[in-house]
Structures are given as C-alpha cells and as structure tokens.
Length: 315
Image 1 (cartoon, rainbow, N blue to C red):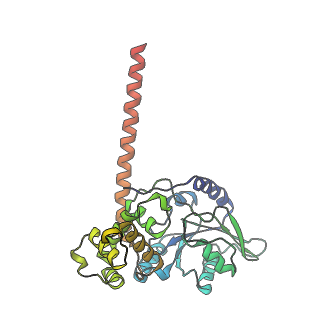
Image 2: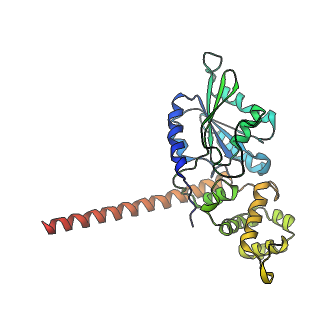
Image 3: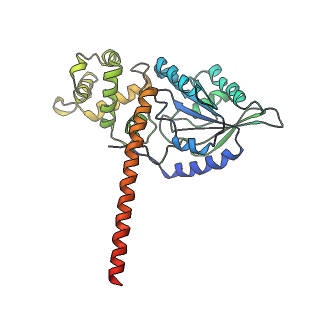
C-alpha cells in the first residue's frame, strides 16, 4: 500500500515558501541523514529556481557514517549545491551552516546586505532542534512527532544573518513507494497515515539484508537469514515481551517497539537508503507514475468522448 500524507496546513506552507523565496539568498533543506533521498522534497526543487542550496544531513549520529559520506559526495558534486552533516545537539558543528551559507552567497553580508536564509524540510527532521542549538535557548517548539511547527519564524543568528524557519512540509504525492515506508519509519508522517505492522515488515526486510548484526545484537535472534519478515516480527515480540492473551504475540506492539528502536538509535547507526538505491527506486517510481497519468488521461478522454456522443445522439 502506498503511503501518502498531505494535511491542509502543508498546502498553505507551500504557498508561504514560494512567497518568501522571492527575498531569500540561500535555501537550506534539512534532510534526514538516514534517508536523504526520501526526505528531499521534490516540490522544493521546483520552487527554488536555481538559488544556492545547502543540504544539511541531520541526525548524522543515528545514521551509518559510510552511507552519510556517500550522500555528501553525491550532493557536493552538484552545481550550486553544498552539503554538510550535523548532529543537532552539538553547538560547534551546527554553526558550520553559517560559514557554508556565506560561501554559497559571498556577495551578502554586513548590515546593508544581511544574509537571508530560508530553512525548510520535512516534518520531524530536526529543524527546530537545530535552531534552538544555534540560539542556545528554546526558541522554537520541538517534538518527536510530525507537524509540530505550524508558523514561519524569523531568527537572527547574528546582526546580519536572518534565518527563516518554516513548518515541515511533504509533497502532495509520494511516487517512490519505498520512500513512503522510510518516511513513516523515521517519524515524518502522521501516525494515522500508515499501518505500524506494514512499515515494520518493510523495515525488517531492509535490516535483514543490510544490517543483520543489528537485529542479532538488539533482539538476540538466531538464524535470521532463513526467517521471513513476519517470523522475525513474531520473534522480536516474544523477546521483548509483547504478548497478549494465550501467550500470543501482539504484532502491533512488536511493530511499535521495532520502529521506536530504529528512531532512537537503539538498533545502532542505520541508514535506510544509499544514493544508487534511491536513484533506482526513483526511476521505477517515475515510470509507474507516468503510467498512472497516462491511464488517467486515457480514462478522461474516453469519458469526454462518450459524453460528446451522448450529446450528439440527443440532438
């Protein structure tokens, strides 16, 4: 099942971003270092119109460092783009974004030409935490749920550096199926928009093939290579005591435990996608979406033709 989530306030945020971009020098897009491709907003790419872009891979302390480096190399090869990885809880690395922005827009700076930076990203990616770290105080609300920030905020990091914080926003249609699952696992999508068990099974499939030692170490499982996703979820439930009447495993609770362990880093430093993997998923998603649009257009054309025939018969 494809996962989609685009509440009404996100449409308003999209409009607000488009308006604010007219006076912005650098656009910062915060990405989840565990899923940079899936957490990059394709809608934003069409809005920034070639403005200098800084990609911040947040939560790097939770991500596989080798994968993070691969993503940094991927973005830094692109024209007009710079990328850095940050652990939002550390003050000194967070300040690196000011230097990166000045390098992207060297013509801005000073009281007469202050740097104007827009920071945006998907829900729960760590924007508010980063801003609080930069300011050294709780300026922006934070929370481990999607959609905490609802209004634009302006934060003066220095006398000539203004940072505009926007609410987290997804895009109307997620065409990469795996991205929907990865976003749900990371906490970027509202809890009512997905099924915990389905997301947990997808997560287990990836962990089984890419991070088997994480499953073995956390849940003390045996012979995971020959078990299905469903069997692994059952085994995790038994190990963690997620049981219900008759000693049966509560699969919903098991799924919640697995997702929580991934989000908090209890499973270790894990990334859910590599650049080559995501580009392959994206190509498949674009092909499937093109086919969907073609079917939709064909249906609309057939419906219009049928209507015109009815009209001519009546006349």
